Image 1 (tube, rainbow, N blue to C red):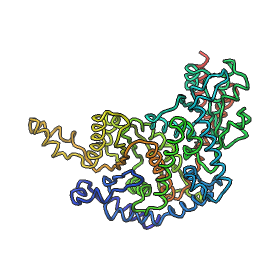
Image 2: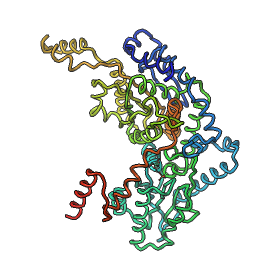
Image 3: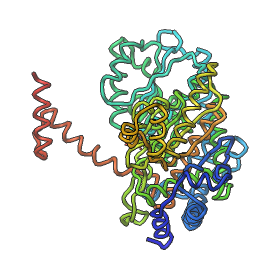
Amino acid sequence: MSALWQALQQQAAEPFSLRQAFSADPERANRYRVDACGIELDYSKNLIDAKRWQSLLQLAAQSDIVALRQRMVQGEAINHTEQRAVGHMRLRLPEQALQQLDDASVVSEIRQCRQKMTALVNQLHQQSYLGYSGQPIRDLIWVGIGGSLLGPQMACEALSPFNKSPVSIHFAGNIDGAVVHDLCRSLQPETTLVVVASKSFGTEETRQNALTLRQWFLDQGADQAAIARHFWATSSNIQAAADFGIVPEHILPMWDWVGGRYSIWSAIGLPLALQLGNEQFDQFLAGAYAMDQHFLSADAASNMPVILALLGVWYINGMGCQSQALLPYNHYLRLLPSYVQQLDMESNGKQVDHQGQPLPCATAPVIWGDAGTNGQHAYHQLLHQSQLVIPADFILAAKPQHGLHDHQLRLAAHCFAQTQALMQGKTVEEAKAECLAQGMSEAAASALAPHKASPGNKPSNTLLLPELSPYYLGALLALYEHKVFCQGAIWQLNSFDQWGVELGKQLSGPIYQALNGKSSVFDSSTNALLASLQRHLTS
Ligand code: F6P
């Protein structure tokens, strides 16, 4: 561990009071504030001072951030365990910048894919895409999981006020049959388009759901020509999609240089493009592009992704925090925590560095959260009073997508009040004074005060978006992508593979076979569970 890491850990062990920091420095809010692409980040309510912040900036300067970023932009295979480049930023380049890319074949593939998406969206909007019985398509089922689902599902929810699609969009991810069962009960095959979204086209959940949906079509009287008309795919495994029976014209490409959790900008964004229309989808890409430009050009000290990354590293490695709350004070952003969970935890939840050597410290945080104010009546109690320190990102969009002005003011008041309460807390003396002011006896006030007091000194960031539009959502998602990138660079790990998810997949095969009658012996716990399950299934 470097001397700088050790210095950081020593500094983190020194006492620090946010209350005192604010009263000693009237400029604190301005000092720790940054704007990028119209998004404002107030990071003044973090457990940092000038000394700590300088050390963190030094850490950024000594890290691989700049060099790795350069290698990413140049298309080097920085995902070295899979020999893949990391090119999701190319997908949000505006036409002019796209033209300047070195690789002509990549440029033409991106263009062709965009054109194909645009044409499909137009056809569906104009209701000129007819199903096998001659009726226009009314529903689209998006079959995918992980990165092939979380992004479009979250973004469609986030931007639902911008919905102008005549086609309703449904998502089928889980292999739990309940999902497709319910969809098949409520939809008609003749007016339904199915898009099988799988980069590998080998993911069990997606294949199983797609097969069940195909059978549903056949059971309802559709023939092979009808299936060909109603099924599309987005995949980098063109052969497997074709083997499934999807005609080549209906396959939207993906590329091995786009990781699943970074793929919302590719054809995986089709549901969002369908919902928004092509122009607004371009705005979504434009917001992400603007954040890319900020990330690529701003100094570390004013680079929003770098700042968020450093703060995260400070809490995880300096203070031993294991989790990070993501609290959008916006109903439409309620799926954002699940999306960022995959982005952050699948990227940086690793055990070894680039050379395969054990990492000397913990890496990604456990990301969790939900829309405010709901959480205030559930888990905020723990944020305020438990001994755990859980840094939290609060996200607020200033202008709402509805006209209920007073609701918005109350929502914003709660958002800001939470960060204030976490920061300043309430001392036992203050709690006691409050009790006395309410007319309690000295004894009763003394007894209740420790229960009412809050330690404060709990860190948070506040991200303020002008509004939750396609542009700002694009910028926000790119911000979190780059934050995760910077942390991976600091920890010197590969943020772009996910080998840890493979073991469970491997083990499920023999267990499934055992459930189908093949005799196998597992550990005693699994054997007993299998026996109990069989008993229930056959009773
Ligand atoms: O199992 C993890 C994972 O590989 C994710 O990284 C990916 O986003 C998801 O599965 C889906 O993969 P695919 O798009 O290949 O079906």
